[in-house]
Amino acid sequence: MYKWFLAWRYLHTRLIAFFGVAAVTLCVAMVLVVLSVMGGFLDTIRARSRGLHSEIVLEGGTLQGFPYYAEFAAYVQGRLPDVVRLTTPVVYTYGIFRVPATTYTKPCRVLGVRLDDYVQVNDFAKGLHYNKYYPDTTHLGPQAMPVAGFTPDGVLKLPPDLEAANLKWRESEVDPEELAEFDAEPFQIAHYPYVTPAKDGVRVYSADFGGPAYVGLAHDGVIVGYDLLFQRPKEGGFPRYLARGTDVALTLMPLSPMGNPTGEPPVRLPLRYVDDSRTGIFEIDEFCVYVDFDMVQHKLAMDPQPMADGALTKARANQLLIGLHEGVELNAARDRIAELWTTFLGIREAELSEADRHALALAEVLTWEDLQRAFIAAVEKEKVLVTILFSLISLVAIVLVGCIFYMIVEKKTRDIGILKALGASSSGVGSMFIAYAGAVGVTGSIFGIAVGCLFVWNVNDIQDWLASLNPQLRVWSPDVYSFDRIPEVVKQADAIWVAGIAIISSMVGSLIPAFLAGRVWPVEVLRYE
Image (cartoon, rainbow, N blue to C red; front, side):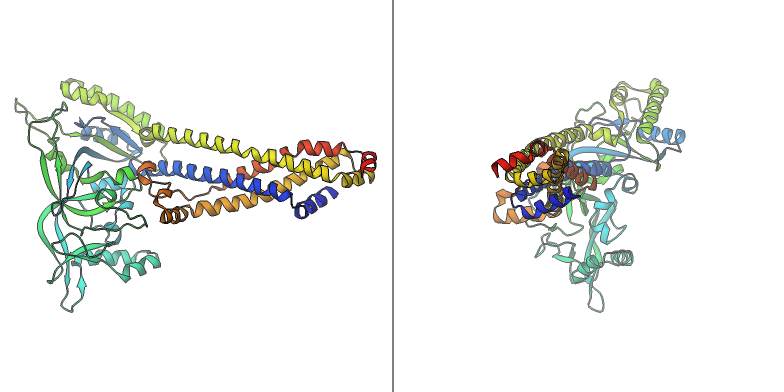
C-alpha cells in the first residue's frame, strides 16, 4: 500500500516529475496527431476511391475503348444474377472546356455516363450541388436555361418544377441550421444574360423582369467539377460565379478503333452547365466534366460506324462499371467475373476483327481497390515510415524519465533508508519508483491525448488562422494532398495503444533508477545523511 501512497505523493509534490509528465504529453500528442492525420488521409483515400467507382470495373485501358461491353454486361448479369446488381458503361476522353461568354478555357477529362445508373453504383450523387436543394432536377439530357421571374403577386421565384423540387427537399429530413441558411437567401441572381453575379453566390440563377421560365436553345447538360469551373477563396467556402444553365462548350477529338485520329475536324459541343460536383478529391474536381454517355459516344464515333463492306462496327466504351449485391465478397466476385470474361472472349473469338482483338486484350477485370492499389500502398508505407520516425524521436521521453528518476533517487536516499529500516524490501522500494513512473506515464498520456485530440479536431481552423497571418504558413494544399480538408478524426484504438506504449515506456525508463534505489542500505544512508 505504501508504494502507491508514496508514488502519488511524489507525483503531486515533486515539481521535477512534471518535466517527465510534459515530455510524455508532448510525445503522445505528437504521435497521435501523426497517426490521426496520416490514418485519416489513408481512410479518406479508400472511402473516396470506393465512392468514385463501382465495386468491380472492367477497365479498357485505352482512349479508343473496347467493343462488346453491352453484350458482356448482359452475359454476366445472366450468369451471375445473385452477384451482379447493375452494370453501366463509361466513355472517357480528354477535351477543352470553355465558357463562351468569357475567355475562360481549360483542359479537362470528359466522362460520358448514364447518370441514372451511374449514381447507383457509386457515391457521385452525394457531391452534386444543385441536385441537393432541387432533387431530381439534374440530368444530362437537352434542356434550356432556368430563369427566375416575378409571379403575379410580385414574388421572385424559379420555374414551377424547380420550386416543387425544392419543396420536396424542404419536406425531407433537413438540418434546421441548413434550412435557416437557405431561407435567409434561397438563391442569388446573375442578371441575364451576364454570367457573373454582383456577388459570389451559393445557388446562382439568372433572372429577368418576366415570369419564371426556361429560355434559350435546348442543349445537352454537363456536370462540371467544382474546381474546374470555380476558385475557392483562401478564407474558405465554395462560391459560384456562373448561373445554373449557363452556356458552356466542349471540344473533343474522335479516335478510330485503332486509336488513330479519324481525320474529322475536332467536335465542338454546345452544352449547358446544370450542376457542379464535389467528390472531395482535388484532382477529380479540378479536371473532370460529366456528359451524357450516348451523346458523347456518338460524337466520338464510338457508336456503331459503317464499314466498307456495309457492316457496322461494334459500339465501344472505356469502362464497364459492375455493381454488386450487398454482402458479396469483393475479391471472389472479381475472380468469378474475370473467369466469365475469359469465357466470353472465347465465345466471341471467331467474329473478332484485329482491332477488336487488340482492344479486348488490354481490358482487365479489377476491383476498386485494384485500381487504386499502387497509390494506397504508397500512402500506407508513408504512414508507417512517419510513425516510426516520430516514435524514434519520442524515445527521448524514456531517456528523460530515466534521468529525472535518477535525480529523484539521489535526492530521496533518506526516505529510502527509512523505508528499508521499517522493513521495506528492495523489490518493494524498486516497484514504488516503477509505479511512480507509471503514474507519470498515465498523467502525461491523459494530457497528451487531450492535446492531440484538440489539435486534430481543430487542425483546419488552426491552419486557416496561420494562413491568415502569412499565406506561406498554409501547409495543406489540396492540389498536393488531393483533399480539400485535413482529416479531423481520432481513432479510439490509436489513442489507446499510443497511451499504453507511453506508460510502458515511462516505466521502462525508470528501471535503472528503481534498481539503484532497491540497492540502497539503511546503514549507508545513516553514514552520509
